[in-house]
Image (cartoon, rainbow, N blue to C red; front, side, top):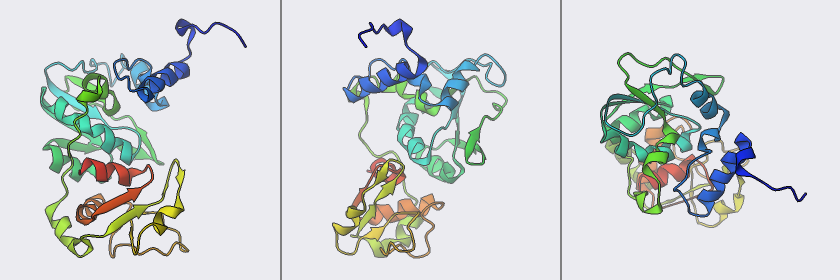
Length: 250
């Protein structure tokens, strides 16, 4: 309506929008506003001076015992975990609080301790910090320290599939895997692009007749899913956890 927009008058949501806009323009130098990416994250930061988070949040410097708190969904957790190697190299001990389905994946890939997030009715609940913690950080705040420029994105695989699971799905070697539905929408035509693709769609409906891998729970058996993906020649998918697994494995 012609009013002058001043950054100092921004709401928290507007600060987050401006942060996201900078990312879309390829500018990762300023992460201000990122703390408002979710109600969970904003609340965590606003409570940082109260128990159980009275211990200072991590500033990226050397510390004895860092507690990393996972957040958002399975795919988000995999995506932001690309920053864990940088964090691990700067501290003596790391414990990663993550989705229970991902514990074995992160232990194997990073050689760190894990503990399951407290999930109540599908929502994460804050847990008390373990004894001896000297700093804590939400997982998605690690990029504020380690992803300030496109050159700082590693572009190399960082998740390792279980070798036994890779052997388990060796019969699928050379196939194409497809996933056509995620939180952002659906592109069912993906399944029609290839002859005889393997379905990676964990919520496949009864009338979606693509072949699924035998004896594999596509939602809960993440090690199995990674073992299957490791055998595929190609994965074609919408934005969903499958995309993050495939990318993180290279």
